Length: 548
Image (cartoon, rainbow, N blue to C red; front, top):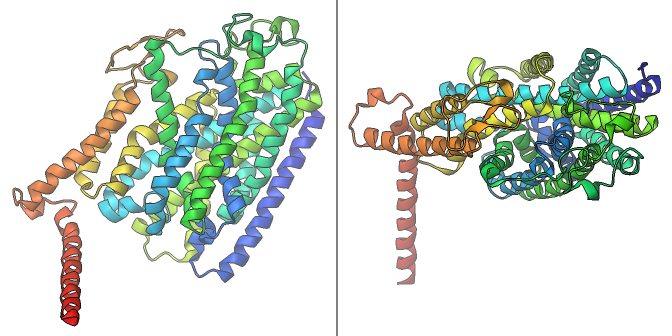
């Protein structure tokens, strides 16, 4: 196959448009910096907490509808061992946004936090918070990796451009415009990218559905033809795993800094809620084309195409089924349009992950721990260096594995089993303290490692009920073990927080052993409550004296 020159030209134009938008947004960011009363770091990371409603909806949706979303859904639908019922991404995201809008947005906004980790530093101190930031940073790096993998595979198939070149070019472009304007650049480029994703995918669908090599997908939905039915099934002994994956995607997203960056950038709590609810609807609509692509691929006689046999699944290319279907089942110009959708999706998620990790490091580690007296100018350089470092780390990881689902699930897994229970406790349970958080952290990491992970070849040391070999011969946990680990971690945090609180408040241990100073931190709260109570009594007495 020769290099697809027209396709390269189209991609070059697309990248130039995105880069131009990013530069324009960065100029707008500088103008806003002169008008806003907030510091430069807040303008860079949160767009001055005054982002437009429509732009906010677009950037939140584009953050979730990334390359992993588009290619992962198509991969799961096509995979004969999975099927559409396992392509869970769109539906759990509706739950993510609704829970985020109703419960998590309010405490984060009321306290005017800058990042997701601010409540941890405020309550637990810098040392423990630094340890808790680690899984959040790793999840962001894996996020960068999975988005680049999806684009690299697509370009290699459709444009015949070497995998390395396509990944490096895309990484450099995303890093450049993220460096220039922070959240402003990311948000405004997301508007263009989301429009391109929507239009490009739906333009490709009719050509795929009517290609001569595929059977009507309604006939193959529940009937085995060239492979197992593309709808798939959830057997009773697989229900636990399906539930676990659903909860992982639904609740894991609530422990991502990128989500709170959009929530905190809104001008009001109402706007933040509207942003969440509207984005949930967009995610559902944008997931449909990928399901249809996977369904068409599962209904195709590959022997009658230029691709030939063995099938993509048998060649271990299920992760690239979307670009393969576009390349061999649609006209060339349509496949080029399709790669535009994937490229847009990749860029929209990658820039969010870059800025998310830069926010955590610059605000919670550098500014709050390393150099508290750092100037705005210094912080701008720290943010830029962080963006480059995460971009390079994520790009390097793409050469280790080519599966989109591997990076997708491992990244979200860390957020769900480790970070989510910590976030719930620090926001909604006053009893939580550093001791409980430490035990929950260790329990979460320890149990997750010992439970194994077939995607990275890690055998399980703990075998939950139903643990057995899957259809691909890998030892797999079919019990909802990740949800179990999350709940154990949550319970551990609350239980040990309660126990240690009693120990120090009852004087069972000397205050010198109180490393996290929980007694000292709770005294001001108690003093404030006593003061409020005293003021209330005095006001009541004054009111009674006036009446008499």
